[in-house]
Image (cartoon, rainbow, N blue to C red; front, side, top):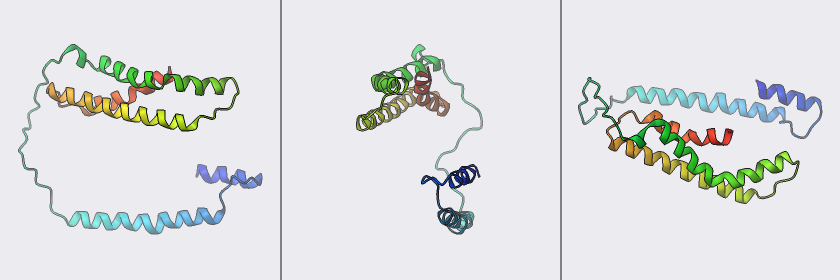
Length: 159
C-alpha cells in the first residue's frame, strides 16, 4: 500500500521513476494467481505425507550446561566477532562516509562490492567457528549466540 501511495505521487508529478499501472496489475496477478495456488498445493501434498520419524530418542529432561571457559562468555564472543570483520571494512567505510559528509561523489563501487563479500565471508566463518566452540563446550543453546555474533558487526558500524 505504501508503494502504491508513493507511486501515485510520482505519477502526479509525471516522473520517469513511476511504475506503470499495467506492471502493478501484472504483479498483483502473479501474486494472486501463481503464488497463492502454489501455497495451497504445497499444503495439500504436505498434509498427505507421513510424519517424520527421527532415528534417535531424546530425553524430556533438560541437560545442565557446564560452566564454559572465560572466552566463551557471550559479551566477549560478540565483542571480538564484531571487531574482527569491522576492522576489515573500516577503511572502506571511512571513505564512503567521508564522501557523503563532505558532499563528494564516490566512484569505487567495485571495490566496495569486494569489501562486502569479504565481510559476508568473514562473518559467516566467525559464526560457524563460535557455534563449533560452543557445541564442543556442550552448550546446546547455540542458536541465539550464532545470531548475536553475526549481528555484532552492526553495533560497531552503528557506533
